[in-house]
Image 1: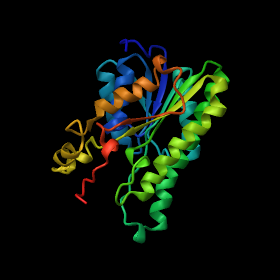
Image 2: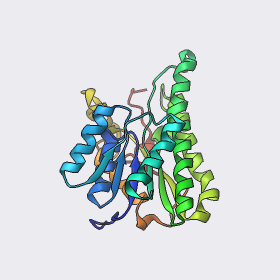
Image 3: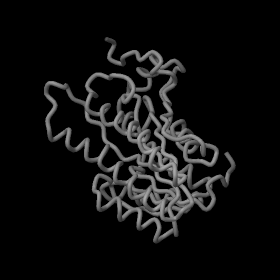
Image 4: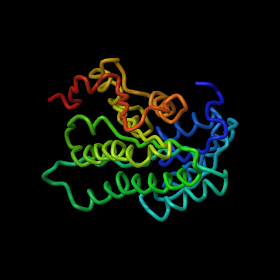
Length: 257
């Protein structure tokens, strides 16, 4: 993609204080987009925005809870207030909860549903309303997971939420396409982030069971995300792009069973 592929574009990226979200925000800004960067952790959000500004990107921090419907609506309003419009949204904020199905608690499920599904749904709604009013189309990207495609031990609840987001993207093709708004999902596999790097065996374990021989980097996921929100993907909507080094083709368990 051209270095100014996203010139004059305005993007919101949630859950972007670190990891995949930060990399997507960074890549968007480096290619010309103005970015409103959200994270629940205010310090992470501010530091991430400053880091992007230091490399020449146009970025503001907007910390807050992406599971809160009022907040995500205000976030869309803020992006338009500051940058004049909204063209791109990446609903990256999400949480992972591991748990044995037989012992899984209602409180854990509710938190998962609130952020992964409810927050993403209403951010998509608020963004699509704004894009519809602007009359010039837009790009929406939801962050799924390979666990929305393949069963994974202790991740039944999490995988359920990710499969739901993929169905949401398919369903909204009907309602968003007349307004030239595309909606897709990226489904990352095992990815090296600050969180997964805390496990000293993570890279080795996933390297052994991934056909390409390594887990993904945040750059791998960022490149896929940028493609789906770029002009080059204008005729792609309702799709999920799996970025997992081929893991879902075979789906070997990292637990060895």
